[in-house]
Length: 120
Image (cartoon, rainbow, N blue to C red):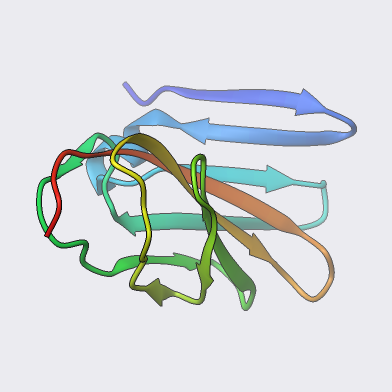
């Protein structure tokens, strides 16, 4: 059975679909304002990934044309676009975020937890 949870705040609803995240190996968050919805998905890195060597490209996408910005919980801004090659990531646990923003101002956020355990 698919589990989804809806969180409401400031007139917005956030839908978190655990089954879609698990089956796709990605984190999906959907922000809806009642008129349109935008989804953003992180394909790489997958949630829970431990990286013990060189960092490969991070990739993700949005369900509509949008600006995609990558950040993390330690370093901050990592880059923008559907694919980036991050540099300067700190060792240890960190949360990777991908934020999609449309020209109309709709936004959505996906996150993935990773742990860096060694250098290249």
